[in-house]
Length: 237
Image (cartoon, rainbow, N blue to C red; front, side):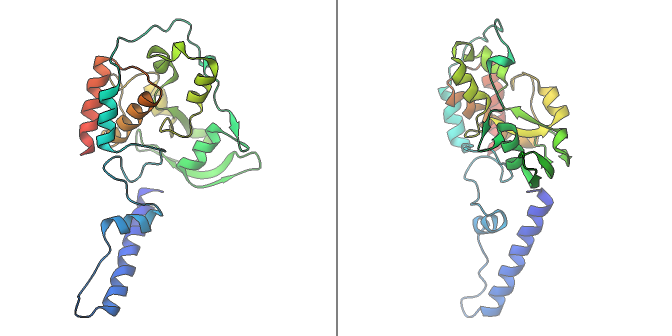
């Protein structure tokens, strides 16, 4: 849902609630819906608790406190070698239910997405959380691994078997895949938060997603990475 559409829905929800309340108010006076009720009415989902922004579509994103706890449980270690690394070691964009993992993310993260018989989006709108760009063609959208495959390799994935790497590369259950603009994805490359970050308004969700993914897969972080994640999590409130 775009921010403009969300704003319009919230205003509409308030207007309807105000009109209904004024029509039936008595001695108890005016009673407006709570912020949580407004958020749920506008998006169809409850408001998030204590963590990422209300715009996020990432699955299983932890709250701020849980994210900080997860970060504290990660093992801090020196970055490993790239020896033996290849993207082919992480078979990705596998198909489930007739759609590839890439197509699933395009559908999940887009607005008004319409697909053809092969599950390929033909139209829609995608907001890139990394740089604030709005895209209207699926061909212009990259699916980013929050924790890049090479970064995972350097922090423990080099010891995994092929099936574990396949799971990591196609993970739709955890906050590991996101639709973003091609320039932002290319800019990020395989860098960690110690060297690359999205625009500051997305620091909280990005750090939560990165931390949760590394925690789920028991990957290590460097001292510099840990410091950067701590700074970014501090923006969560």
